[in-house]
Length: 160
Image (cartoon, rainbow, N blue to C red; front, top):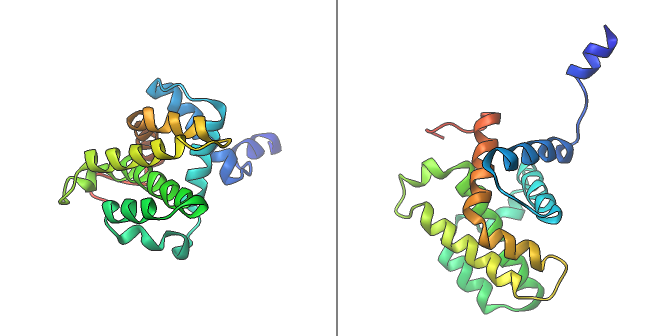
């Protein structure tokens, strides 16, 4: 009896939980992802689980303004701003695409801004260059993966 209870009530870290969800959703959506890209998406979900308003302070600004600010900076700050823009766009299109239909801008705007931000990051020489290139190329596919996770975890509804 104890073994059955353990199987039902096993503890998982957020990383373990999201890793299982991402792997399953990638398979269902037929999206091929490199190991590092898969890890990046898992980490993105873990970041959005933590409620840290300071980390997401500029999310109320239009994406075009955020992109312009990022492009006016350089170095580490630019990379951080572009990464934040790409991540926010990917998360939003995956989890809240239905709500975008009620706004002045649609999902395509978020897709183009996010893919552009990741594409910009892919031109720098660092360990995540290929990850950002893959996220840029397959932005819609990864958005579908997040939408699949959203539907299966019932974190959103069409009205949210």
